Image (cartoon, rainbow, N blue to C red):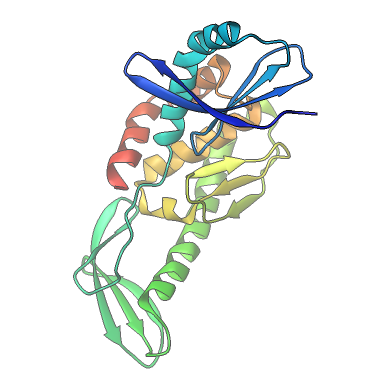
Length: 236
């Protein structure tokens, strides 16, 4: 049985690492960094405080790198108010929103504008969300189909693609081969969307962010750092 979880902290250089600590009947120290940047430490019952701090200081650079990786992969687009003149993104380009009353509900891209025709009984936000989701589903499927042959030598079966709103991730994948993508990703440039999909497919070969994972990603998409940066700079 594990003991109560306590919240502790460790200072490493100018960084303060907060972590949840618990003790269990085990032989080795376990450290987990989660997508929301939480850190959990599970230590054997007989671990001394001195040994614990020493081990955590050794692993601090790895913990910080994991947190930075997750942070750079978080959706950062601020909330929109859905009013006329507001800018909205689609495939990396900015479009000014224009809302017009109409007898039927429809969303169109027209002359650099994102035009929402709507009836009184529905919000522009709901219409746009539905439009983005439809565009995301079609574009992600097409992109996945284009990219998949690059992984032919790894015997990856055509993964199931799921569109799901995620507050802290652009994408994820399951051990059974399902690739999950955030519909908000449709707002990013096409090359950045390809980067995210490649990133997830690499995880179907190497499940963690190991050296082998990054070597594979580098092989498939040599300029991935540039596309990752474009993703971070565009969706802010």
